[in-house]
Length: 352
Ligand code: NAD
Image (cartoon, rainbow, N blue to C red):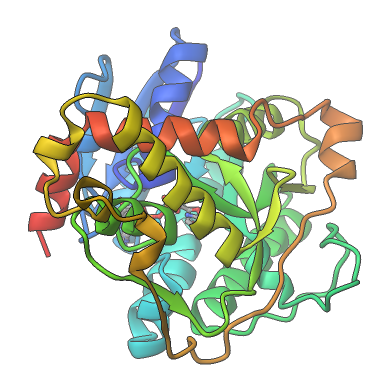
């Protein structure tokens, strides 16, 4: 049995991961540490049994140090972060504090207990990071591999890059058992509706414009959060200490294509499912129009990266990782989840 501390477990990926870990490692003890910022929602863990939830800040070293020591934590899975690029452009400071200083605080606590005191048990610190640390690809460049040089372009990705370097340094300098995964764009249940897919689903349901940055030709690799969680589990359980693994969804698409798929799927839902038009009377699809009529081009994001893509050969070859769903399957599941979980998204949207 392991005692697992999951930071940011009330956020989008963290909450999915807590659910994944409880289902696949039922004998482990799970402690969730989350500051419940605007992006963290206790409701995202409703119905999850057998976890200890602690509302607290990863930057609070005393808290984190005490927690790791008193609970005998031997695995840390670190999701807590400020994660929205647009917010990092308008207000970078909290990104530096949380993503860099917060990660350092956790590493210091892990080192103090696992190495300096020596728990005598195996330990692992898994750091969840992003493919954005590698910068932007040209149209014909190969995907990001684990040896692609770092070239972060936004305050968000720069702060994540710095945290990745700290994790690496704690392994090389002190011998802390660490792994890092850098993943592509996630989507799926419990994603705060400021990110593209949930924002567009909810805007479409309410007949609001679908704001497309610039020409909409920015390309991203889309990864369903359940596939991401399975990939992180593999890295924690079987990945080599000190190594980095890139995790992708095998679905590189321009934003415009993603938006068109969302529009088409919403139209189909309105055509085939009874009662949706009554629930969402403002939707274009409830008024005899196609959802795509809501598409609106807006000014591009400052410094917007054009293309991310993942070279998955390392995690596929070493650990046998394969995403289980196609993008179309994952998107359809996700739209159904938002249609079926109105109480969740109304609650989290009302908080800001
Ligand atoms: P999120 O913004 O949905 O959730 C972040 C969580 O961290 C929230 O619950 C928030 O309350 C918590 N948090 C923030 N500051 C904290 C602090 N100081 N102390 C404790 N908790 C704090 O983020 P997400 O989309 O779930 O992303 C999780 C991780 O995955 C992040 O590290 C992010 O960089 C990385 N990532 C996300 C994506 C994506 O597509 N969402 C892609 C690549 C990497």
